[in-house]
Image (cartoon, rainbow, N blue to C red):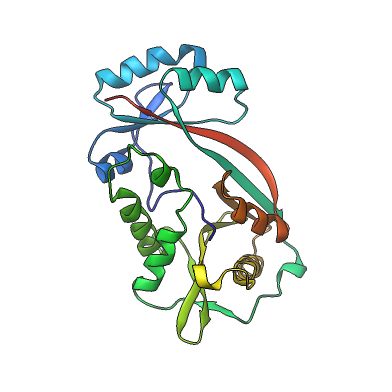
Length: 252
């Protein structure tokens, strides 16, 4: 199993300060106000947390590259829970990328079936929304179920590809074009099918599709703790370009 961190729809919200913005989609999904911390240095965080509390924000995210060990300790001392090391990997595409596996085909269903939804939930094993014990029960599963549904209906993905064993779906990958960059979303392989090269086939197929669609590079984001995913992407020619610690602050 491998997976990517993200959202099933646009998470943008109003920016009320240089230090944070409210996240409309997240707030509606979880049923309480959620914000993303943007600006302050860790040493000045307390001011922002006080303002967020006065606005009734219950959960705030902090993601930033380049934090020192001291910065991270300061954030955790102020209540931050380290839930992820958000890791971005990229690779340059070339004609050699245009050699897709014949074991992978496009998913053509009008909606996500039970097999796809199960794979999407499996893909979130290392998700911060699963690992944070304060996330309300059932919300992680609902988030990933909605993510794959919105991928199949093309709201947040251009294509969904699947690997099958006879008629059974054993793995899937979601793909989106963004300018000249191809972006991989969810990737997952069923437990019983792991170790058979299906993950590699899926990633190579995605890269081939990206190249054929005119993309110059491909990119994927996964969790630092997700070693199976990291090893898969490295094997497929990707390299790590950025690591960003991600913390959750629960304010009420």
